[in-house]
Length: 176
Image: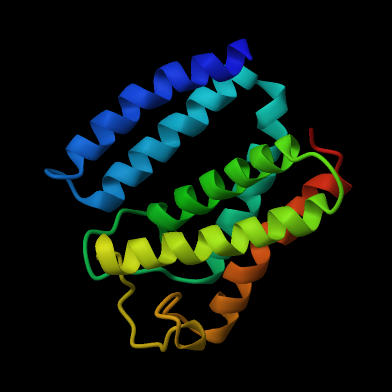
């Protein structure tokens, strides 16, 4: 529990700073910075434990962000042709999902984490689109008219299934 306490000790002030910064700096830049710092802190504190899942999450994220070109209606930060916002957000989200998965006890662990992932995805997509105004430059309809994931069909499928697929991959690779 000491490692978790260290993470919380760093996370709380960073979260407060991120929330305050969001009033003055573009929200996507704040999220990129906040998630990058949390991943770095997690890696420094947990080392190998989080390192393997971080590498797998990053490889999935960079493969997807290389395949699909993201351009938002507001500020975009690119490294080559890769938008850093979805790259960092996907990586962080997958690592965070794996950490939660490892804490789940009992039967049907995979089903529980899959449902948790989809519910969280829908909530995060809704908040990002409607409250934070994070929108792609496109006119695609939302997923099942739910007002979320305004993107091509392949992207909708990827979003809904990548969390559970990541868990299956990391389980297969025996990532702990």
